[in-house]
Length: 355
Image (tube, rainbow, N blue to C red; front, side, top):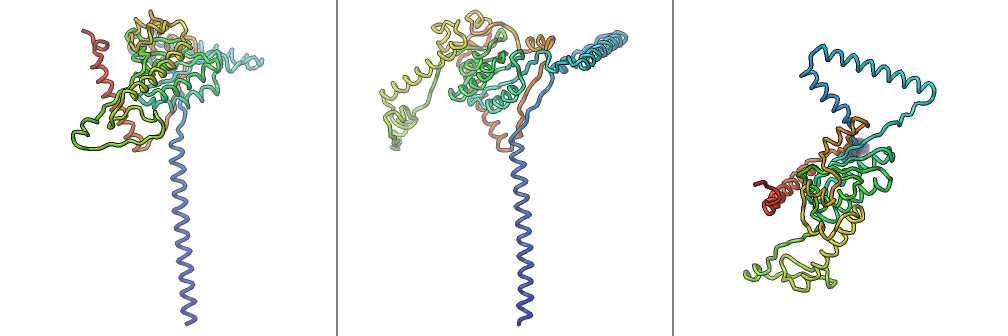
């Protein structure tokens, strides 16, 4: 009996040890997987030289259209110039006169705005990275595309751009297609605002709309109750009976938001006649420059190529690895934005289609 109990005790101890080891292994794997997932979602900054991109384009065109002898002469001249510049830099370094920070740097960002201004998460990281190195003699160029969206979301995006202004970093914003409503709230912060001739800008206004199904519910003898604490906790509702008092309060809140919007715009573009431009209307670039909504007519490509002639131009992007759920959600948002944009274009076809 004693031998049996001894053997059973040893067997039980071995089993418990094995189970404990398996638990520790599974816990370790789970911890590593969780850490990897966290790191994947943290993202990273990617920087690409646009000078090199433009040089590669130039060389590709030269290879296609120039005579081989001419190309060889150009390559020889470029190498001679590079050797001379390297010699000068070595001489300056030997004398202690080499300035590693010499020359203007231009940092290029992109903002593709949806209704929720989802790109603000990337924008905040990109601006934080740029502020680590940028100097007042450098410049940030934002290629902005947005037809607007939620007030608080675009307010945050605008606040991110204000960080550059507070650090005295020159900000140029280029609008190739559209910067309206919340998009223009961002655009007006620029020290220099450029637009393509047929880019859409303006729409300094506020809009809110919702359907009401109260009569449909009544017809089908369906009751809907909404309970609130606070007189104006819910001014309008989709399913309850809306009152004139609730509508008046809702319109009052819209007017207050519009006033804040106008005050914000005029702070950065005091030369604007708000009685003319703050009507909710839109203007094409060639019209907007006359209204002083933009400073000049130029595409982002033209401006960046010009800058690359005299400065080092870098494209800065914050890249974050997205899981399957995030990608599906992003596809859904993009699809809804596309549908709403098509609806808006049809509603305002006099602005969007030539005849």
